[in-house]
Image (cartoon, rainbow, N blue to C red; front, side, top):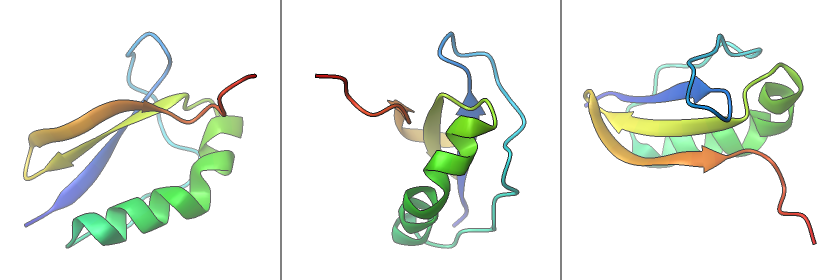
Amino acid sequence: MEWAWRFEKADGTETVPAVEPEEFTTQGDAESWIGEVWKDLLEGGTEQVTLFEDGTKVYGPMSLKADEG
């Protein structure tokens, strides 16, 4: 199984991530990685991400912006 993130602007347009993603063999690895680099991704222009397993959407888009309020 291969897990992968799609990196997007808020309108769903795909972006090139500021941090090169690793190859993930588990969902936990993919989620741990995004938890470590989300701020760098956001600063580089990625506003949301979607997680895929072997090309099938698992969830998302998930905003990288902190909730305001």
